[in-house]
View: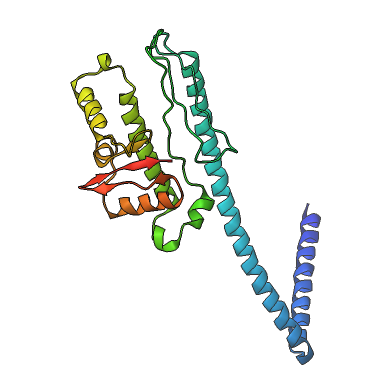
Length: 254
């Protein structure tokens, strides 16, 4: 046992001696003027390599973060899918059955696309529900083509959020207009009569909302920003020219 330990100690000492010899050799080489340029280049390359390794490490950390985020998103979507599947399998029998779903032609002209949201409210409806036309969201290309002076600091998402709010007002308004009068309570009936009074010869056959509708059905503020976005939507041919007088705003759909 002692012989083996002595042999290991000899090997260790010899290894240290070998390292010292190499260090001395390198030290002598370092004093050679002809090799200083080579060593400087090697030092520079090592510095660049170290920077690249640091960047690579940061990129790996970022990709791991993205992977974890995607994994969480996938788990969330899986949970939502299961919940939707369970809801679909357990629809209460007393709810109305959907007879016509959302129809959007991907290659159609945006001005001609409509969103159909009709459902069967009773077994014997008095009249067929009319499709409610909505403003289509802007595409990224359309947003990019809006002049900078017109959109100012508005973002793509802000304009589409605005469109969603307008669509909400339109859907609420025309859903009431399509209701049978016998089913209306007093507040709904008052809104219905106001909608009828708002109609003019210019709005006949048009989908439109006025300032009162915006305030009734959305959280939008009718301010300078509101009018800026209206101008953008007219520029993108989402709206026709409206009438603005006496605080009234008529927004017509193309």
